[in-house]
Length: 121
Image (tube, rainbow, N blue to C red; front, side):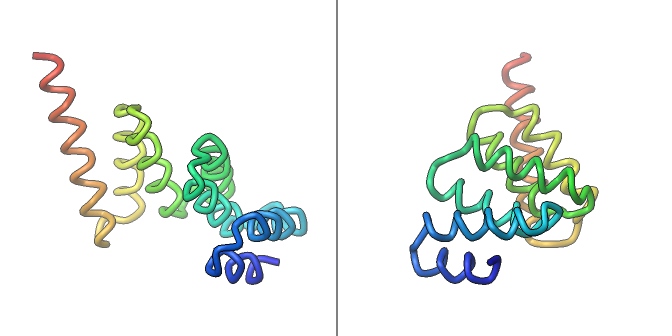
């Protein structure tokens, strides 16, 4: 179900992909990649609340999996929740400090810090 969902998503068949991600999750509720990929699909469709819930579930299932932490930080940032985005980017950097995405997270933290400093003073 998971691999089929990935193929369907790649071919632009989002509704069918969502169904198969859900089927994969039903078969294995602890399948963190299925939660993560379903969140990505929801985010692509502008369904941010659903994406947020799925990312939170992925994080709860595997606290060492950095990707959902980064994506949740991005969602929070886009929603204007700067403090939560910062908290999540800091957590991401604890999990991954070396990748290209770590650089993006570090710049996100710096940006939020600059915004907070400007609003404080």
